[in-house]
Amino acid sequence: MAEWTIIGRDVRDELGEGTLWSARDNAVYWVDILAPTLNRLALDTSEIRRWPMPEPLGWVVERAGGGFIGGFRSGFAEIDLDPVAIRPIADPEPHLPGNRMNDGKADAQGRIWCGTMDMAEAQDMGSLYRLDPDRRWTRMDEGYRVPNGPAFSHCGRWLYHSDTARRVIYRFALDADGAIADRRPFVHFTEADGYPDGMTVDADGHIWVAHWGGGRISRFSPDGEQVRTVTLPARQVTNITFAGAGLDRMFVTTAATGLAPTEHDGALYEIDCGTRGLPTGIFPG
Image (cartoon, rainbow, N blue to C red; front, side):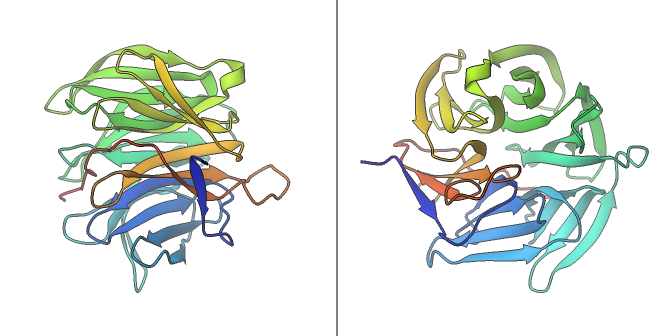
C-alpha cells in the first residue's frame, strides 16, 4: 500500500512551503512563495482555495484574535482573508532589500521564530528572528544562507533550525523566556540525502524532516538517529505538518521550481505516517 496520496490533482506550487494546521478552521494552510499565494485545504470538503499575495510570503501563523501573522519579503504583517487585508508590523531588514523571509513557526508560548535569506541564495546574509507577543522582534542568530524549519521539542527545551545550504540541522537550548544558547549540529545531511528543509516534531519527540533534492521525508530520534524514511515521487520536498482533530494526518508540500512539469513536483501530499503531532502554536498578540 502506498504511503502517500496527492491532494488536489490540479494544484501545483512553484515553491510550496510554510505548512500550518488550523484547528479553528479545520484546514491546512500553506504558501507558494513564488506565486505568491496563501493556500488552504479544507479537511471537511477537500476544497483547495488560493489567495494571491502582493509579494513573496514565506509563512503564516494563526493569531488568537483571528487572521494570521505572515512573513513577507518586506517583513512581519497581519493578514486577514475574505477580503484580503494586509497590515505591516515591522521590517527587521530594511537595509537588505535582496532578502526575504523563508520559514517560520510559533512555539507553545506563541512566540514566532523565523528565518530570512538572500533571495539569490548567493550570500550568508540570513538571520534567525523571534517575534514576541508584544510585537517586538529580536535577531537571535545570523550568518545563514538558507534558514529553514524552526521546530520545537515536545518538552519545550530545544529549538531545531537548519541551514539548508550547509546541509546541517542545528539544535539550540531554549529557555522558558525565549533565550537560546549552545548551538550545536544535530544532523548532517550527505549529498545523497539532499538538503534539510522544513521540519516538525511528533508527540513522541521525534523530528520529521523534508529532503529538498532527496525526494523523501525522514524521521529522526531525539538523539539524531534516522529511524524511518518515506519516499515521494516529488524531488524537492519542502515542509511538513500534522493535522486533523487527532493530529494524526500528515501533509507535505513540495516545489516545482527549476524542474520540467510533472504531476508529482509541486503537489501537496498526505502521508500515512502512523503517528501523531503536537498542537499548533498560536500568536496571542
